[in-house]
Image (cartoon, rainbow, N blue to C red; front, side, top):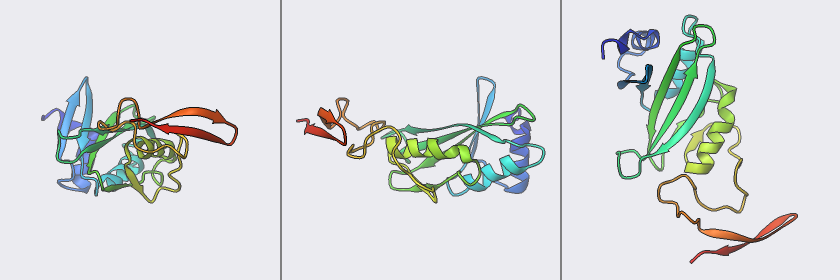
Length: 172
């Protein structure tokens, strides 16, 4: 663990917000941290705006469903990269089923579509997001397809599609 604490981002975070890093994870030569959802925005803002760190690229944002395996059902994973220092950092936060997490669109504009996708696929709410419109499913779609409890065959099937609408049949 002592090697991980040498990561420049972890040092800066501990100086700025003592105790904000709940856990440090090293896997495949990369460093990750876990922070509370209430702290994730200020952590990400510091990681981006600090002149030495400059994690200026949100390369990915993904949701994970841990239904029944963890106290909080979901985990959000922010993959950060600094185009100046060529450092990588993974920031994780846990989100309960009926909780929201602050949007990162005010930190990185690139968070817009991945947050919309996480909302649509998992039902995770992003507080302050400018517009959580659907990206991958039609408006009539019901449910969150990447949740572990979503039926493998879905809840309904399209039996006819036509310009301006769709005809559905509910599965038994």
